[in-house]
Structures are given as structure tokens and as C-alpha cells.
Image (cartoon, rainbow, N blue to C red; front, side, top):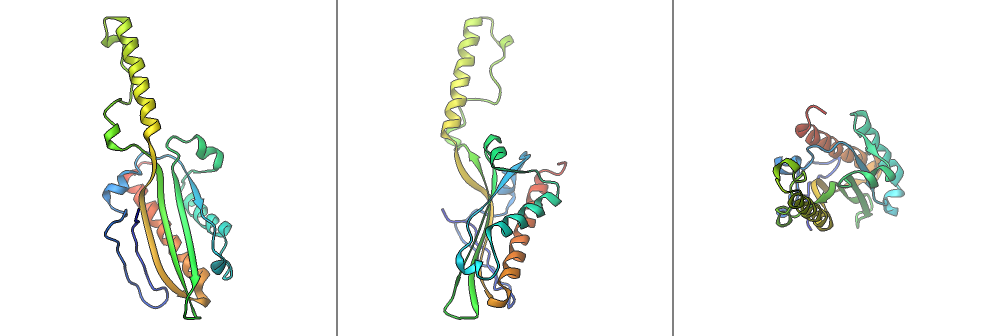
Length: 205
């Protein structure tokens, strides 16, 4: 699946490159953040070409988590994430490679919020709450209704999938003398965009 692409040429000019088939930071995707109380941060491994310029997976993870915690976000560890409903996490990918121009390094930054979602075709079967006893005059019919509701909810969980519901991406290049600072600054901007998107739908957090 394609994801939104925003790109810039760091230190030289600012430009935007958009993908026609993309998730993005828009009202609909921001709505998917509503009600999320905690989430994990998952950072992929950093390639050797970026490590040569001082970037590491632990450095990127620390940058992201510190920025989130300063704003009061509850960032889950691996165990906490495994127990959080929907398993939501901020997925961070930073990759880069040397280019034919020896003074430039090409890079991609991706920040996506991923969580378990249910395709709409499976949403008709069960509501949020089980049938109420007082709605039935016959106890046996109420038990059958509760069992049916429980089965429908179980089927919904089995059919849920993980998907990126909010995200921003960047592709660009940076001079070899500014790789670490340029990429860390770009990533910080994306994390700030996520924070703003989250607060837009959770103003009383």
C-alpha cells in the first residue's frame, strides 16, 4: 500500500512531493486517533549508511519517545503494548543511502500510526454492549441473544487487521556534513505533526 509522501531537499530548498494514493494528515485520518489513551513506539533498524553519520535506532527511538513524553503522552513498553486494546503504536522508519554524488545522502522518513481496525463489511453483527436482560421477557431468549452477541464480537476480533490510519512520509537528500541533524530535525517535525493531530481530536486529554 502506498503511503503519503512529503519531501524536501534539506539545507537547500523546501519542496513537497505528494502521492495520489496516500494516507495523510487530514481530518479523516486524525479522527482515527480519537480516544487513544496510550500507544507504543516501534522504530525500524537504521541502515549502515546512516549509522556511519551518527544515527542509530536507539537514538531515533529516544528522540521520539522523549518528545512525546514531554507532551504528557503515555508511551507503552513491549509488554504494555501487547495488553493495550487495538495494539496501537507509532511506527517510525528512517532509511538512507549514499548517492552517486559523494556529498549527498538520500533518505526516507516515515511516521505512521498503526492500530487494529475492522473492515466496515464486518461491523454490522454486534454492538458495543451485550443485550440487556430487561429487554427480554424470556430468560432463555436473553441467553441466546447474549451468546449470539458474544460470538459476533469474537468474529469481529478475528477479522480485524493492522493498518496505518494516520501518517506522513518524506523523501529527500542531505549533505554528508548535515545528515544526523537534518534527519533528526525532520523527524522531530513529523512527531510534532502527530502531536498536533492527536490533540486536535483529544483536546481534553
